[in-house]
Image (cartoon, rainbow, N blue to C red):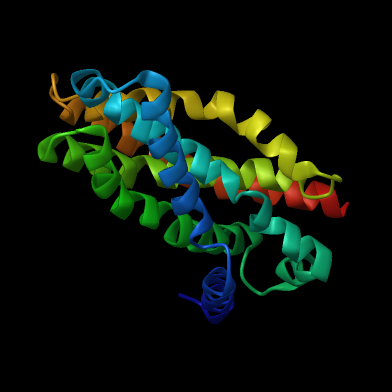
Length: 217
């Protein structure tokens, strides 16, 4: 990895360790904890809808930290340095997306099997949920980068990011829940999720970089 990209990645990882990295996991836990109170103490029902609850909680937790992806760089002048970096802006944005996924998406993947116990989800289904999240959360991170780039110059733009991203994240949610369904073979939906992740990984940094260039102009 070129040195400008490694510097961006190391900086964002260090900032995430300083605070905010565990906020998504805490929100994920709150969603999983509160939902059974609304559904009721029906363990078979919770076991059936558990994968959907886990995926919905992970989706909302992923959206929670998107306002921090580019806003701090916009406020302290970091975006100007990103434009002047010797590496292409698309690769710099990709490095920031990778750092965001490592600090928000990976903890959700690790926590999902643990939280699944609270919903009476079986071990095999829990592993399927974790595998689908491992493929789905990078796609959500790439989508979130586009929304963050479009709203970075707006006051309270962080409130607009979920509105912009949620419609585009629906396919990821649908196939993620389908891949976690214990009653069906999950390899087909997992393949679709992998395709979505690869497609968003290519298009996301390009679209986010284009939005940042328009903001500068």
